[in-house]
Length: 580
Image 1 (spheres, helix red, strand yellow):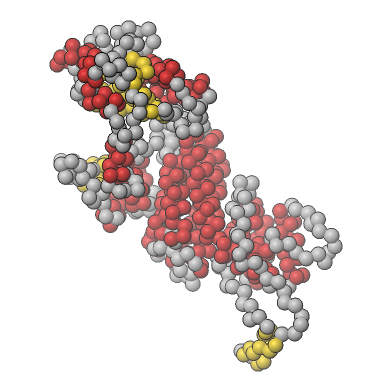
Image 2 (cartoon, rainbow, N blue to C red):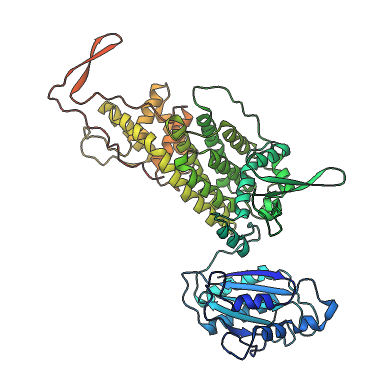
């Protein structure tokens, strides 16, 4: 159940006319009063002798009685909406709910006969509207301190008492939702999201990895936003406002949003605090890998260290969540087209997980911010080759990071942030499966091209490291396909001069594996980072059907007809990648 409170000026006639009217899209039906301050308020919906003006005049009477002493804000409007999956509530249920809300918020405490006047109107099955005036009948002003917080707390109690879906309680750190008017305007103009939501995402992406305040403002302008700075008389910048091009009000003026109204952590003072963890430069040593691939591998290392801090459970991990949010925003901007939508959804979901009342003033998040900066400057990654494999590598680590964030928030009772972390993990899993399909298939093919004794040896090493007994009958039994990608990775590490057993044990001991859906895939990416192996190994070269390679002379290969010896079966190229 969601209560939403708004306040306004002037008389109540405009609000009453809307509540009893047809609605913006003729969605209002059977408009009528279900409860009121005295139980006898005019009901223009059910009584033809009552008018809208009569109801509005009775509501406004205490305000008019005090004349010039009336406050600037005189209207209190609260909509209370049930969840779509909740059971049907009748008029008596909604009347009781309305009385509980006005009591909890201080509009009309139980037994107070001189409280504010109010009326509850129902024009749909799933919600009511409570309209009230903010001058009490005894001439005093209503005391509405923390009315939104009190309404939310009462809604949680109502959900429990009526057996409704129980929503997660908030802690006051969530970003402000778009208003109804903003949503209607977005629909009229054909936008898929409101300007507030679009601007919030654009500002988040602009601050991701930014080194200076000037760079942050430059990124906003490069993203196509209108930017207006607020200056003190001394010339110092006090704050900023942003607007979408073409978004104008009825006076044809740009609709400006201050950073603090987009989200609590997007105010200029909060952004300046984040910029104190200035990222390092963006020119790492040159390697044979592309810049997007290299920066994603480095980001995976930074994310794994942040996961360790979250698993440790200290309050300093709160800052790591901010850095992880920047890393997700950087990836969402530069990801291949196939994974971009899921990564944008992951970044949007995790944004809620980056804010709580836990403060970590002295935490160092330069590594995560540097990783985000490097990814942004490296540009868009391709969805294939080493870029695609490196994307799968960093996403594998970020899945575990977001799950660690969910555990960290749950331990502190942050229900909304924990739920947002788990939602982000699901989006990351979907993006990971898309990125990992080709690399893991190539690794399986390489494993199946290994001599059988070598495959059995690597599988024995894997089972010993994971504590899994070999239940197959006979020492000459064929290897299973489950460990193919991991066996191929160990074979590559051994060929590069590393001890595969030592690398596997180090990868298994480095972080927890219980939250992973596919521990083998997690180990694959860890070992490939530890051994500095390519994220996408070269494909296994296979002879054409009906021929086999024959060595003719050094540096030259010819083919001859194949004998009747059956060829070794290859991996099914359509087999899906294991779930993370």
